[in-house]
Length: 594
Image: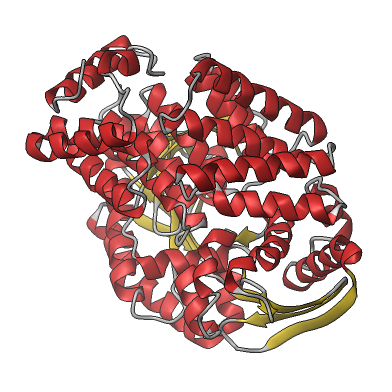
């Protein structure tokens, strides 16, 4: 392994110029064009100040030099990878401190690579430079991305902090490059501003239903769900989950506040008026920063025309906020759905009931899904949600026959995929089942990849994929996926599932204190969710909090009186038998029945 100090001296080449190994750093401003369009003069002045006061002096302190600066980035070289990475970390921390007081944040992406470069008096060039430039496009604002070569030089110092990104496709290169990420300093404001600047971002607020009792507002929620479903399938749009916008149903539409809390630029809101078999929908798209109204529309007709109305609204919104995405693309990626209003209505009622986790309401959810299927046998979503229902019944300890319920999960998810191969619910649940029941981890990950490709903004897909990586022992990847789910839906009423996943990821990594924090959070959000209680008890026992572990164990046994440690642990999906043994030990420490 090369040392982390000086890499090599320059040597003459046949072309007449020196060729040498160098540590190359390429920095770029995320969302530069948007920042310039919002405040050209201010952005330019702040960028020049960062160059003069932070970036150039920092390079000198770390034995490097700024080779050149462009309008929105810099190319730098250093004698060692360690110098380059320490410069990058220093720059990110200083820029973060400087910029968090601004309304429009400058956030840098920095890539570090070690490779051979050729030189002229004023420049360096070659594949090494090109790799660094392309690599930074994959970096997170405020973070640092390392090529595998650079990582190998600094792994003794930064290895534990680095996250493996796998092999990336870089533009204009036929081979793939492995890369690693170092998280930079990040505030909630930084994260929100980045999500707004990096790509068009939108939140769809609950449509207000006039003259309808609160308990029947599932109809308006369903319209929003379908609009979000189509938007979320587009790679170029950042969409906030419907569950995270429900909190704004009963609040006045303070657009700057909502935009800032959710990290979005555009907000779609609307009103619905139903009268017998007639429906009228009005919608408004607004810019949360300027408060300007970009588009309004009002449509009406028979209830049977609802789906055509939703298609038109979705297409118009997409064409307004992302002109490069055409209506044909919207229609191509829009998920398959019913044209039968009753089937749609039953599905929404079941979805509203399923996670309340009282036995009566939970069983009623299954009845609603079955009615939806009876009305329209070709509708994929109620099949997928029925699979979810059987999965939850097993996890809660309510199943009279787990084998039959697992078979039902497989059967209903398969039928859903036959009707809609891109149904994100069915893909995600099928993946979870393959990992949990059949230990087919490769098949599970393939299904999760399909789900996320079909709907990259699906909180459900990201969250459901997290436990599979815990089963494989990769707690860091499990954590990343759960965090992505939270980023997409920060106010999700069902966030207890994702917090459970974060607790599981921390438990697998041996970070029992964090596992307890997330377990306690999930328990507060949904005290009846037994999948969390089992991991919460184990985490408490592992951290030494035996008294609280025994108390939570008692809560678990009240909800699942037939729970026994060895029956559960020895059949759990961990690939490594030592993990199952450790889980058994922790649960027994809490006094749960063997």
